[in-house]
Image (tube, rainbow, N blue to C red; front, side, top):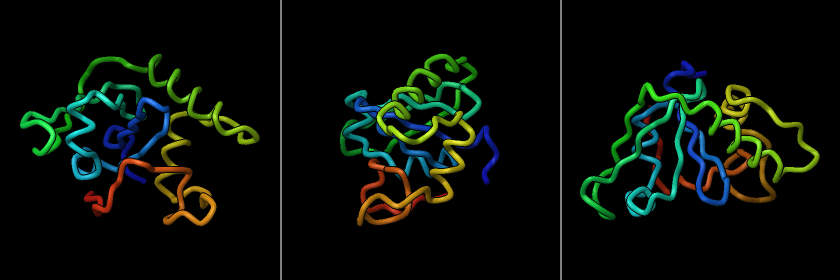
Amino acid sequence: MSHPADIVMVFDRDEELAVFPSLRATEAGLEAMDVADGEYAAFTVEGRLVDLRAPDGEEGPVLVARTEEDGREELERHLARFWARRPGRPPLGPEDTARLLLAGGPRTAGHGPRRLRNPFRRGRAPHS
């Protein structure tokens, strides 16, 4: 698995979660339009806030930077809401959740790759 400081957990407004193995993969996996609209909250699994920007607007690149700002409490709230929407599954902490999603997680009924749900990757191959 990637080093925890490199893994990025991105929650959208509906508390869906995408996990990316690196900052670069996060840049490749998010849509600039959604980043510009403030759709996401992003964290390392260690609880540092991750800054997401679309400096050229909806059609430009996405830029991602790890910060030193502590977002552990906010990450835990997002994660609790994420797991609350999955009854019957025991909630996991940040690192175990990331490991599960990066490893493929359980397959969602007939929908593409193995994962709980990674709604942000829209036809682009992630880069490590």
